[in-house]
Amino acid sequence: MFEVKNISMIYDMNTDEKMYALGGFDLTLPDRGLVGIIGPSGSGKSTLMYCLSTLKKPTEGSVRYNGREITDISDRERETLRRKEFGFVFQKHYLVPYMSALDNILVAGNGSGKEETEKAKDALRLLGLREREFGKRPAKLSGGQCQRVAIARSMINDPKVLFADEPTASLDHENAFNVMKILKKYSEDRLVLVVTHDRSVLTDVDMLVEMWDGNISGISSRA
Image 1 (cartoon, helix red, strand yellow):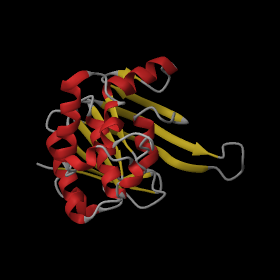
Image 2 (cartoon, one colour; image 1 turned 60 degrees about the vertical axis):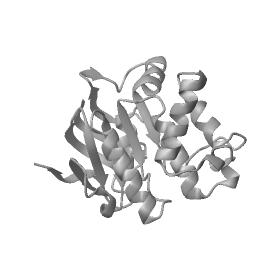
Image 3 (spheres, helix red, strand yellow; image 1 turned 30 degrees about the vertical axis):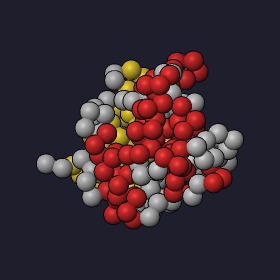
């Protein structure tokens, strides 16, 4: 699904001390499965995810998605790709503060009506929220609950690729492992990329990409 060739991301290009967020490497990712990208802060793992998802354009190199070069597509093509095929979970939940948990999911959906509402409710239930919390605004929910709403929102349009940047960072261990089980199930016929520094949540990944100082230090796959 993704084929990366000689990708690099360089900041401070016009200075003597350039910073390489990505140092130039190749990477091929499968069409489906749960892929973990792990590394310490500053290793380049989030930058890699942003380049794959078209949120950032690499300084050099190529990113192909389903055989199509996506580093130089137009803004309109980029927006369409994100809306129809990509889903996102960020470290911050970015919920709309004046909307309820349920409405925060529905506003991101492509559908409408009762069927879409029930789908959103099912996602919230699956992630451990109770009916009485569906109508609460983010300020009335805990940080962990807000993050689970954000995860439900990312799945509402059944994206082919789900990008998750530290999706369990604000969750306790029980809810973190529950979320990872849900993402694992979701990845059976889709690609899920989880960026994290917490190795304990990646015990069931199909592929593990380890990063260090802007480069890949190791790749392992389940047999």
